Amino acid sequence: MIKNIIFDFGDIFINLDKEATVKEMAKLGVTSISDEMMQVYYKYEQGLISTDEFVDFYHQKCAVKKAHLIRAWNAILLDFPKYRLQFLKELAASKKYRLFLLSNTNDLHISWIKNNWGMALYNEFKNCFEQFYLSHEIHFRKPNKNIFEFVLKENNLLPSETIFIDDTKENTATANQLEMKVWHLIPQKEDVVHLLQKKGF
Image (tube, rainbow, N blue to C red):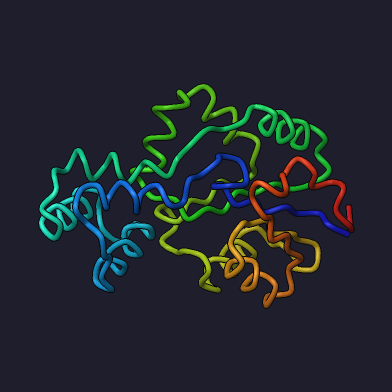
């Protein structure tokens, strides 16, 4: 029986355009991403370097204005359909499940979301969850196994009673290795609001 639900954020609740940042960077003349750039990105996503350090690195490496870099970086973020919030609020109000958010989210992205949504909406969303785990705050990132082990241990969750929902196959594969139930949700084809129609609920 499922007692715990761990949700991803991007393309589960907020819509994403995952190609947008690459396209915007290309417009700025940055057409290839080196291994070094990716390693800096991973560090930033885990909160191991600050936003200033992250932006300074790309500014120096790519010779692009900082404001343009930030705008390109946030281009991935789209809208948050209100029907998904309504679904989440009803699920939380039912008190049938313990709800968690587990997201690879960096400081620039969450700052954009707070500003774009407004703090009232952001807090309304956040308050639906028992715990709200962002990678840059807990210093782990998916699909590494330690981020899932951290959440399970911190909250005394049994993997067999827990489902993890994410749009990235590598992430659900790791969770599945830890014997959690998973839903690899395909954006544009499936929607999180249909969760309770899944087997096991």
